[in-house]
Length: 343
Image (spheres, rainbow, N blue to C red):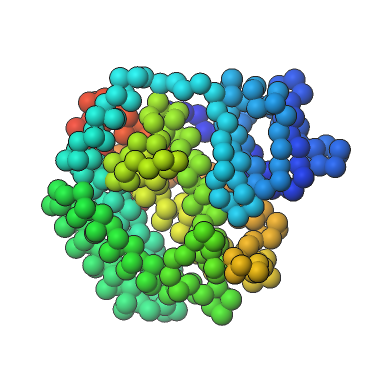
């Protein structure tokens, strides 16, 4: 198990990060705004016009502190890491399974099963918390459909059939996502998933949170020696981290969707915290982005009992725990990969 360390998010435009001894220093307009010991960090994520000294890049790579660069929208651009580590035999087994469509389907089914179960929990919790305010009948019906769909997934053996069920579940889930918004209804309207760029405030929140999650899951996979580019549900494509996308499926409802709903329903983000560009893209302002990052970090610190490990861990450790379980399955230590099922 990897010790959970902190992630430094740098959103101030024009910031410059450099190394002084064993400390990362954040400067803005030649003024030092922050100093942090590097050994307390697991990663650094820079948004927009943020730059780093080559000495800091080298030191972080040497000490396993990844540095990622995102656009101001939260789209991933590049990542600086040290030399590839891990067990070559584990990676070879990962590649063999990925080349075997039947073996890929067995793993893909479990990733999708985790996603379906956790979407179901998001809807069930909305019923529990906001029953009188929402379309309870419609949501209860969809919760029931997801239970049936999970049973059907367990019987499917074809990769395309599993993808079809995953697509159907996503359509049903996002088809009622607007009903899970119980506050600021006129300002935060969700009519369906859109991205690159997001065209409404809810999609803007979701896309940004998914980018953060992608970063965390990719780091988790690399930390246990797996290749994040070679997936089972998502197939090979140049530039795509397919295994990171596979593993993300279980966590989207838990770490992103639920948080986006809370930010809106609790009034932590407001209409005025977003602007619309000439292209129609919706963009968060710095204050809203800061609120989101603070709440994301808080969410990661909440402890839950892992249903398979039977021990309490922070939610932020889930990607590392699941990456470890996946590697144990590929090495033959576990008969099946146990997806994370949120209760």
